[in-house]
Picture 1 (cartoon, rainbow, N blue to C red):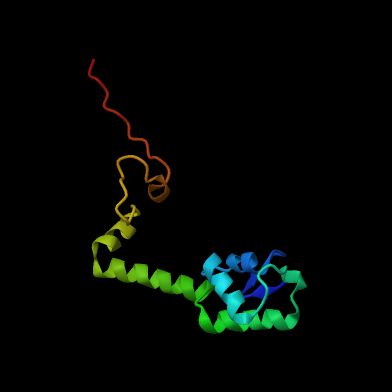
Picture 2: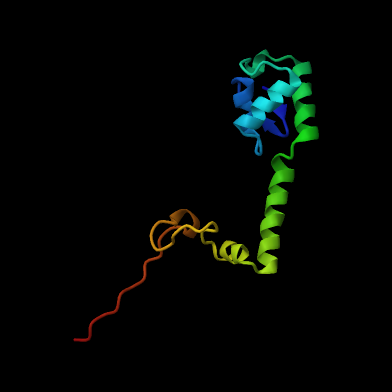
Length: 123
């Protein structure tokens, strides 16, 4: 099993296996295969150690992935919250940031429903 950027890649086609790395999608994976000259339809276990090293170096030098990318994203969100812009306030409150409706839906951001007790009638 190949290990690139701290991720164990499954035995799948190279272009699919690379998407298991945070920060690399299908188009980036195909571009990496093209730049390194590795057949994207080849399985990871069929790749030689030299080919894995070429992939590792390409990703290390050209792409921001895993920990570095997660850190950068977290710092960007923290910066928005610190300057107090609208997007930062939405992040702070745990509400949708990109203009979605919140009257219904938005459960992914808001979390599980919190039931509010209704008023009781006086007898």
